[in-house]
Structures are given as C-alpha cells and as structure tokens.
Amino acid sequence: MAPGPKSVDIYMLRALLLYLSERKTPQRLLTSLPGARKLPQRFVAGDTLEGALAAIRRLNADGFEVTLDHLGESVTNPAEAEATCRGYLDVMDRLQSERVRANVSVKLTALGLALDEALALKNVRALVERACQLQAFVRIDMEGSPFTESTLRVFRLADAPRDRLGIVIQSYLRRSAQDVDELLARGARIRLVKGAYKEPAQIAFPEKTDVDANFAQLAERMLASGIYHAFGTHDRAMVAAILDFARASKIGPDRFEFQMLYGVGRRLQRELLQQGYRVRIYVPYGREWYPYFMRRLAERPANVLFLLRNLFSE
Image 1 (cartoon, helix red, strand yellow):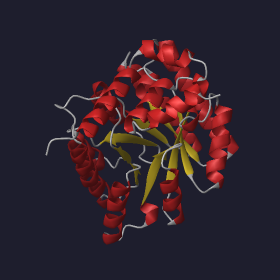
Image 2 (cartoon, rainbow, N blue to C red; image 1 turned 120 degrees about the vertical axis):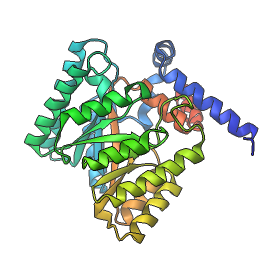
Image 3 (tube, one colour; image 1 turned 135 degrees about the vertical axis):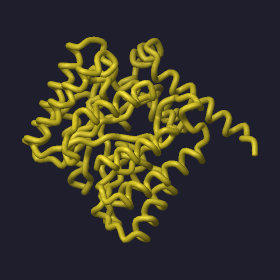
Image 4 (cartoon, rainbow, N blue to C red; image 1 turned 180 degrees about the vertical axis):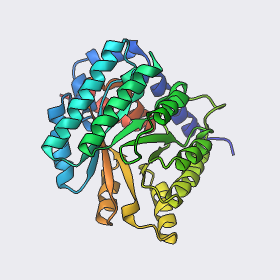
C-alpha cells in the first residue's frame, strides 16, 4: 500500500529537520532569535552542570536513574577533545561526590573521533580508568553512520570491563544484527535505540515497520543473553513486546532497564516505574543544544508546534 499524503508530509518534514540539524547557518539563525533560549527547555536540563544536577536530584527523588550527557559533538581540534575529556572526568567526580544515581553518556566525536581515532581511544581509556576508580559506568553514544565502524572499533580497543563501559546500537541500520551478535559474544552491555540520524536506504531501513521489527528481534537476542542491557524507546508497542518476551522467558525486572529521554514520554516513564521496572532518564545539558534539539523534533515532527509556541510566546 502506498503511503498517504500525511505520511509523505511527515517523512519530508523529518528529513528536513535532520538535514537542518547538521547545518551551521540555520543553527546560527535559530539560536540568535529572541526567545531562542526557551526552545530547548523541555528537552535539555539547562546550560550548566548545576542545572543538570538539579534535574538529576528531582528525577532520583521520583525513583528514576539517570545518564548524563554534556552536549557537544564534532570538535574541531585536539585541544577541544582533551578539554571535553577533562570536563567529563570532572563531571564523573562531581556525580560521585553528590551521591546521585547517575552515570554518563558521551559521543566520541566530542572526544576527537573525527580528527584522530587514536586520540578518541586515549580519551575513552581515561574515562574508563576514572570509572573503575569510582565504580561508575560510561556509555558510548552512537552517532551517524560515518562513525559507526570507528566507534565500535574504539569500544573494542578500549577493552574495558563490561560493567564500566557500554555501547549503543541503532536498529535502523541494516548491519546492527551482526554488530549485536559480535558485542554479545564479548559480553558487552548495549543500549538499543531506533536511531535519529538521516541515513541512506542502502545502509538503513527506510520504513518504520522494518526498523521496529529489527528492534524487536534484537531486543529478544539481548534479553536472552543474560547480560544487563538497556532499551531506549518511547514506543508503547516496543515496550509491550519487550515486557511480553521478558515475562515469557522468566526474565525479572532487575535484569534490564528502559531508557527514555528527558522531557519525552513522561506518562510512560511513570507507568513503568510504578510497575516495578527500572527507568533511566537520558539528561542532556549544555549550550550546544541545537543538533540534539533538532533530532528530537525530527523524531516527532508534531513537536514543531511546541517549538513555534515557545519561540513566539512572551
């Protein structure tokens, strides 16, 4: 059956938002408009670590775990990558001293992956060393397909204990089944997500039904592995499929967790928590919010109305 006009319109809007998320000119334009600072408030926990810590405390008090992301990607020189690494080390120390229930997520292009893979690996090893000292956990986020193989390679070369370093896999990539099998053989802890970048059909499933089917199949493999994994989704059908498989396989709620984005799907987050499942909220913060914000809009284009209301309201 051919997609209807509404489906085509949503697909085109999503493609446009993803395109804009990677462009500097619209970023400068949007972030310079009056009221622009209000735009990311729903999805981003402020500009500073103090703002993020306040959000973490509120979430912890409500029963949620947290993974913290200092926004910023694709640094342009080694000094920036080193500074980002030092910043994450400081954040990890601060999370420990504040005694909050939170780990960290990091994009490897923020640690220099686009400049020098060896630099990114060195920085990852520094984060792992600190995680081992603090009994903490670091999750490597997955970015666009140009960095998929190099991200996985850095993860493998870091050769970290599985309870100190994890990785993300995106179900919209055709290669992900093979990647999951390889990672499970290594005992890696995976966060499974659908994916939020614009990718060509040769390497990514263009249809949502195929992305969903792959997500469900990969989730079952991960649950059956006996390793503690995370499932990043706000899709009620996907959540139901995971819970059905877990119950049928007698996999308890302490053997996996759901991860959901700050400001997205709050009702579902609370429902799962009330049912006894562990829910971890992905909390981003920082001034480099534009790419992340645009990808969130692309995931649910109806949020564009939210953007317009906030941009032009007093």
